[in-house]
Amino acid sequence: MKKAEVYILSGFLGSGKTTLLKRLLEDEQKSGRKVAVMMNELGKVSIDSDAIDDYDVSLKELLGGCICCSIQDKLEAQLQGLLLDEKPEVIYIETTGAAHPVEVLDAILSPLFADKLNIKGIITTVDGTRWLNRKSLSPQLQQLILEQVRHADFILINKMNELTEGQQANITFEMQAVNSKTRCLLTNYSQVSIAQLRNLSVSFNKESLKIPLHLTTFVYQFTTSISQTEFEEFLRGLPDTVYRIKGYIKFDYSDHPFLFQFSYGMPLYIKEYMNLPLNLVFIGENIDWPQIQTQLFILENEKKNH
Image 1 (tube, helix red, strand yellow):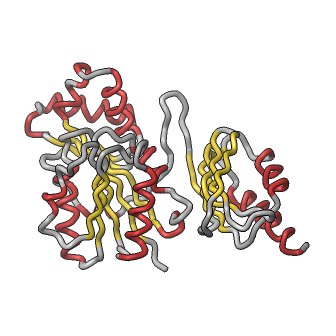
Image 2 (cartoon, rainbow, N blue to C red; image 1 turned 120 degrees about the vertical axis):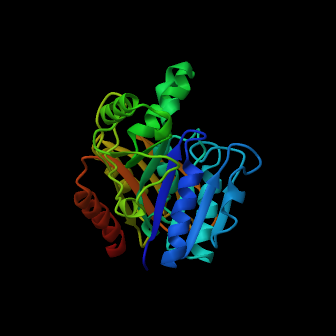
Image 3 (tube, helix red, strand yellow; image 1 turned 135 degrees about the horizontal axis):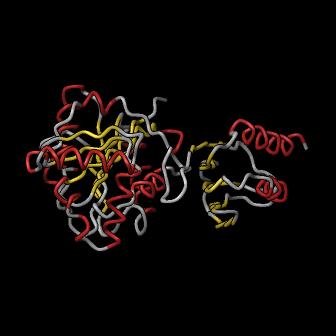
């Protein structure tokens, strides 16, 4: 089955995300692809969904919280429903202005459907005038805007017509200092060559504040239950740079799987009462994933052969 492309639209409030989304949807109308849009608003009422009424798309609204914290479960359920019912070829996720892009990325790397998605990248829109005046914002908002730039795979700097040439040069220099690997484009009203965005591929080479990270992901699909003792032995042997594992795993003493979460060496099991796809999503830095895959394959097949 062909994977659905996913684009994450990030950026602070009023920076041009919805305008960019409309440009992308206009282009999709010409291509004839089946499109779905997920819009996240912190409030109980969607502000931007009316803006895309003219486009023939499946719309899911995520209201009353941020994808990256309070409504992750809701996102998973709606995304799962979209993939099953609508079978879109491309999905655009417009985040709330308060969302941290990497946490949004983490939210959509669900073991339920990670193998059905081709995550193209994070496109961050920046209000050029707000960037220049960001020191007037609270420290938390300054940090958020920096993080949205730091983790982008493509940056659009809007409101170019309100900036002098010197200011444009300064902003570009500052953005490149924060995120040297990403293309920055100065523009008005999110005007960008759509072909450039189509060629994106998410790098996962996200940088933290202190150390560069080279994050990659890996999905393993179990076909049977396994020994919990042997699985925990496998966990103890993992490199310290496997930062996150999440998914569903079934042990030989249980009729139903467990939701499994693993962060910084700490495992957590939550019993489920229905059968779910036995997928585990791994996120780590500089990991030999084929070796991990081999270890899991041996662990699983030892159980089958007993």
